[in-house]
Amino acid sequence: MMKSNRRLYTPSEAAQLLGVGRSTVYELIQRGELPGTRVGRRVFLTASALEAVLGERPPPPSEIAV
Image 1 (cartoon, rainbow, N blue to C red):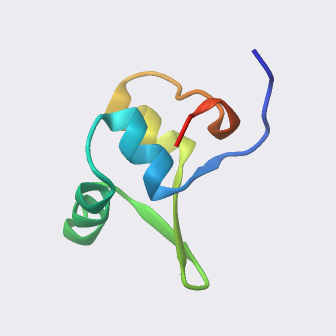
Image 2: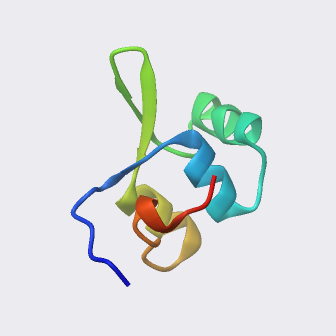
């Protein structure tokens, strides 16, 4: 397993980890149930936010097949 210092996940990557659709991730962010970080026009989720939801550390984004 490769180590990655990357700590941000796209909504598509988060959706795959959570087992939901990408639009559901956006809805969760909109409702405040999942904290998203906006960088310009793009939205990202932090590894710590996903860790809180999953109860475990998520794999590095490079290991997620989107």
